[in-house]
Amino acid sequence: MFNFLRPSGPAGARVERMDAREAVAKAAAGEVVLIDVRDISELRASGKAKGALHVPLMALKMKADPASPDCLPELKAAQAAGKAVALYCASGARSQGAGQMMLQLGYAPVYNVGGLYDWHAAGGALVPA
Image (tube, rainbow, N blue to C red; front, top):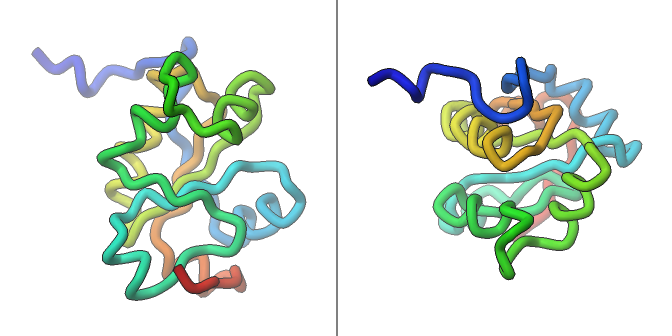
């Protein structure tokens, strides 16, 4: 009944919280794939983190599933290489759920950065949508 509470994906894997300062540094070094899971209206209103892929939460499964013909090449390569994925949204709630989905699709490690404000407050650059 409460399967949604159980960890899924690679054994023992879970979505960890990543400090935004660390995310900014790791993204700049190419050590993580940064994903913005907000919807397009949010993106247009505030821009996005520099270097982030925009994959709205509603399209994430289709765009991140390596078995899908619509899987983004950057995500397929990241999953094959075991590269870390870091997600953010407006507050951190959607990115936590998105992280669970990424674990189910076989990505690991997966991190939740929180919200776009956290990214920007930590010195992360924003770019217009």
